[in-house]
Length: 547
Image (cartoon, rainbow, N blue to C red; front, side, top):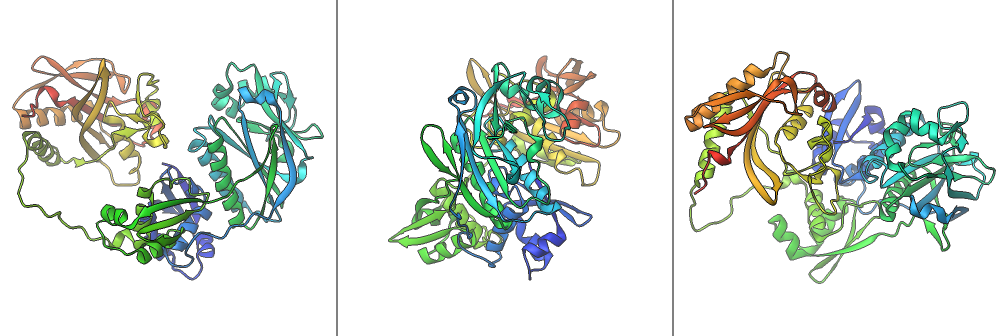
C-alpha cells in the first residue's frame, strides 16, 4: 500500500485551529491508516483506489470536510487558456498515442512541497499509470521551455541531457545504463522508435515514460510549471492530470489549460465534474439507516461533494479529481463517511429461525481453536490480490494467473492460488509490532486445470529472529493430529517460495496436500521483512468432506 509522509508542523498549518490528535483520530474514518510517527513525520497509508490521497494536500482536503472546517466540493477554478500548445506528430499514435498538459503559474515551491509533488508523481505512476505503462507524468520548469512543443518519435541514437546528468546521452544508452531505463525500458521494448517532447528551440523536455530532460529541472526557485502526461489510455492521462491540477491549485498555483493539437485541437485539463444520481431508499438499504434526502446531502458535503434532492433521488456532483466515484454504491459509501463510520451501531439482523453450523464450519472452528492454542493469530485476506504480492515478490512470472477483466485497482487484479503471499503481506504491515509474530488464515484459493476450481486451504507463518523449518513443522503436525487424528509426513522438495534445502511437501495418508519451508531472502526483501519467516500451507479438500 502506498504511504504519504506528512510533517506534523505542516499538518498544523494545513489544518489550523484543530489539535493534531483530533486530526489523527479522524484519519481512519476516511480510509487512511497511520503506519507510524517518527521524528515528527506521520506515515499515512492509503488505498490505491483513492489516488487523490497521493499527497498531503489531498489527505487534508478530505479531513477538512470530515472535521467540518470546509464542506462541499473544494474550490477550484481554471484561470483560462495559457495560449501554449503541444503539437502531436502522428508517428506517436502507434507507440504512446495520448498526451495532455497544463500550466501552473505564479506559485511558490519549498522543499517539502517539492517532496510531496515527487511522491504524488510516483504514486500516480504506480497506480493510475500501471507502473508508467498506462500513463507517465513529467513536471517541468515552464520558464525553461520555448513553445510550442512537439510530441514526436526519434531513433535510438537520438541524444539529449537527461535529468541529473551533465552531458548528452543517447536514448539507447539511457535505456541500457540508467536506473529508470533498466526499470521501465521494457515498456518501449521492440518499438524501434521512441517518444520525446521537444520544444521549438530544440531542447528535449521529456523522454516518456523514462526520464525528463535536465533543461527543465524543477527546484524551489520555480514559480511556473508545465505538466505533461503521456499515455496509452486517454482516461488514465486525464485522471492523473486532474489530480495534479487540483493539488497544484491547493498549493497556491494558478491553473491554465494547454492546447493539444493532434489534428483536432482540445484544451486540457478538462475539469468538468460528473453527476451521479442515487435513490435515497437505495442508500438507506445499503447502510441500514433511515436518512432523509437533506441529511444525506449534508453528509455528502462533509465528504467534499455537492448534492441536491430531486424527489426521492440525490443528484450528486462529483469533482473531476474523485476518479474513484462511478456508481450509486460509491455515493452510499460517501454518505457513510460523512455521517461518520464511528457513529454506526452494529445490530443483529432479525430472523425468525436459528441456524446451525454446517460440517465445514465445524472443522474450521476446530482448526482455529488448535492454531490459536498454539499461539497464532488469525488473519483475513482477500481472494483478489495483485501480481506483485502473489508472484513478482517471489520472482515468479505468474503467466497463468487467473486475472480479472478490466480491474480498477492493481491491488485486486488476480485471484490468489496460495495463502502464503497474503500472510507475508500482513507481516510486512506489522514490522513495527512486537516479535515473535505468528499468523494463520483459512481461506479459498483458485486454480485452473481445465475447469476453474476453488479449494479451502489453511496457511500459517511464523517470524522472529530464530524462526525456522523445525518450529513451523511442529505447529503443522500438531494441527493435523489435533483436528484430524492423522500424521503429516514431510518429504524434501523444492518450491520457489522457499529456500533450497529448507522446504518440503506435506503428505497425509499418502496424498500430497501442501508445502512447508523457510521463505526465500528475495521474498523477505520484497516484503521488507526484518526477520526470517517459516510458513506452511495445506489443501484441506482431501481431509474435509462438506456434507
